Length: 203
Image 1: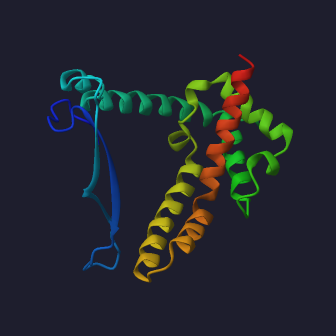
Image 2: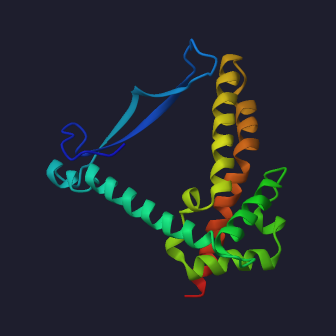
C-alpha cells in the first residue's frame, strides 16, 4: 500500500499501527484469513522541523511504487532466466539456497550462521554480495525454493498465532513458539547482513 501525497491529515506525521489477524467463518472447506489495521492504535508524531508541504515531498507516490515493482520484477526475471541455465556448483541461486538450508538446520537461537557454516560457505555468500550487490534483497523472487518455504512458514505462523490467542496463552509462550517458526528467516537475514558487512570491508 503506497503513501499518497494528498493525505492532508498525515502530511507532517509518521504513523505506527497495530495489526490484528482474524480468522473469519467460512462456508467453504478451505479456511480464509484477513488482516486488518487497528486505527485506534495509531500513534501520530508531529514533524516540528518541516511544514506540511515539505513533508509531503518526503513520501513516495503510488506511481513511484509501481515503477519500483516494475523494475524489480524485470530484474528478477532476468536473474531467473540466467540461473536456469547456470550449471556452476556455486552459482548465485545455489549459494543462497544452500545458505538458507544451513539456517533451517538451527535448533536454537544460539546457533547463528557463523557457527553452523564453514569458512568456505561464508566466503561463497560474501563473494556473491561483493560481485552483485544489486541482487541483495531479491531472494524473494530469485530463489524459488526459499520463497516457497517462507510462504509456508508465514502461513504456519499466522495459524499458530490465531490458535494461541484463542487459548489465552501467555505472551512468553507465544514468543517462543513463533521464534521456532521464524528462526530460519531471521538467521538468513543475519547471515546476509554479516556477509554484506564483510563485503564492505573489501571495497
